[in-house]
Length: 90
Image 1 (cartoon, helix red, strand yellow):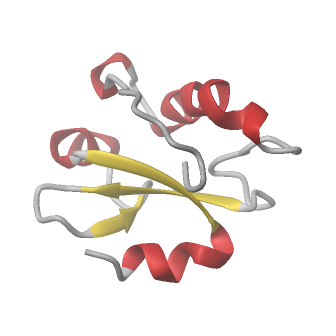
Image 2: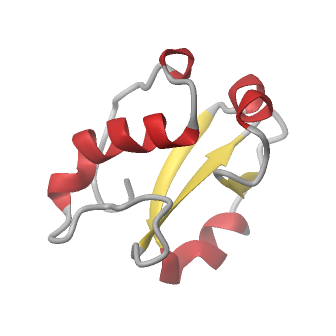
């Protein structure tokens, strides 16, 4: 999560959907935010991004779950107002 130094790992294979993953991340980091992360909800102030083998940041949820699981290497939680910066980082 941006602004929080974290060295945690998430086992993607333990999840069967994006909502399951979001629940785990909410448990891990939701207390860091006053209103919680509320990932994948339209009123959330946060977005979840992933970096695949091609080293490009993308929004989580843009591809089917199976394709995501096969390619994800790194996750990042960022404020929506910083989304442009994240996607255009290498």
